[in-house]
Amino acid sequence: MPRLHPDHRCDILVIGAGIAGASAAAALSSDADVIVIEAEDQPGYHTTGRSAAFYAESYGGPLIQPLTSASKDFYLHTPAGFADVPLVHDRGCLHLYSARNKAKAKARAEALAARLPAITRLCADEVLARVPVLRPQALAGAIWDPDCRDLDVATIHQGYLRQMRRHGGRLICDARLSSLSRQPKGFYAQTGQGTIAASMVINAAGAWGDEVARMAGLSPIGLSPKRRTALVFKPEKTAVMDDWPLVIDFAETIYFKPEQGRILASPADETPMPPCDVQPDEMDIALTIDRLEKLSTLDVPKILNRWAGLRSFAPDRAPVVGPDGDCGDFIWCVGQGGYGIQTAPAMAALTKARALGRDLPDGLAGHDVRAACYDPARFRHPKL
Ligand SMILES: Cc1cc2nc3c(=O)[nH]c(=O)nc-3n(C[C@H](O)[C@H](O)[C@H](O)COP(=O)(O)OP(=O)(O)OC[C@H]3O[C@@H](n4cnc5c(N)ncnc54)[C@H](O)[C@@H]3O)c2cc1C
Image (cartoon, rainbow, N blue to C red; front, top):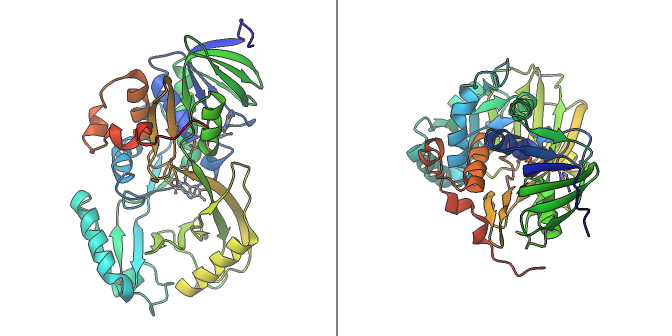
């Protein structure tokens, strides 16, 4: 039985201090007393600290795009006091296609352009003028997204945590949740830093989201954490131009972008993994180099940095936001997949509206964000 006198009390306990937990806590802390707990000794240690740091409305599909578009205003017009430096930098994005993919690329470009008027298609010569290191042989053209940006993830993440603290919220690190019991009113949480009583819980535990639900005796969603690898290198034979856009091949098997004279690249891998402190696999590193050499003339003399992170997906690959069907005070905020940074402002606003039972704010509804598309009620699993 839990102790009756908790070490801490709050209205809302947020589990996980990645971008999801930090942004949701910042949004909720203006209306409620919030505590965020983080298992690690620093926030952002897992997926949030391991991203490729780009924002592209053309990346992620039809249920990610409204959330990304609804986040744009926040990123372009940083709220006063949030950060001292810009949150984004111009980049642009080319989705390359070959002659074989031309018809599909045309259809994808038209579907995107219906919602994002800046999207156009470029011919192979126009693509090569932008990124001369691409091999022309298999290149027929590209979908061009001029609004893609680089994100300053550390500044964004810290900005949210600062905003939460300013509203009186608290972050407790080294506080892994070990049990979560449902009480007649609210929850009782055991953590590495003592016990916490809360009226509501926000599950922002990333790859561990299903584990947290099970602790509360609730059905898991069926989240699937998938490893994605990234590496950084500096070519010796080619000068890297900082104005090159992000380059992604049509089937998303490789992407790269410049980063201060170096190249960040990923084989866009999606290897299912249990939740863990995931590390890169040598095969994926070799695959990255092989695919880069087929796509471009970039040489990879030495890898300067390599890492991997878990992108967690719900069975339908859309984020999961809203109250659990069996416990309305348990709010899901998981399944951000590979888009959790670019969608964070909208995801935080959606989480707040669902947690507090409010209508969606204009900034979401105006971008066609529909709460039902992300509602956990779409998964009905038997209790495990
Ligand atoms: C290689 C790579 C490239 C990516 N590139 C991009 C990109 O360019 N743009 C983009 O938008 N997204 C990108 N992503 C995806 C993005 O990083 C994720 O969607 C996002 O970081 C998920 O954030 P999160 O807060 O849900 O998860 P996390 O950052 O993993 O946070 C969850 C936190 O919960 C904590 N936790 C778990 N269990 C417990 C517990 N029991 N008690 C207490 N705390 C707990 C964990 O310690 C963790 O810190 C990329 C991901 C990878 C791996």
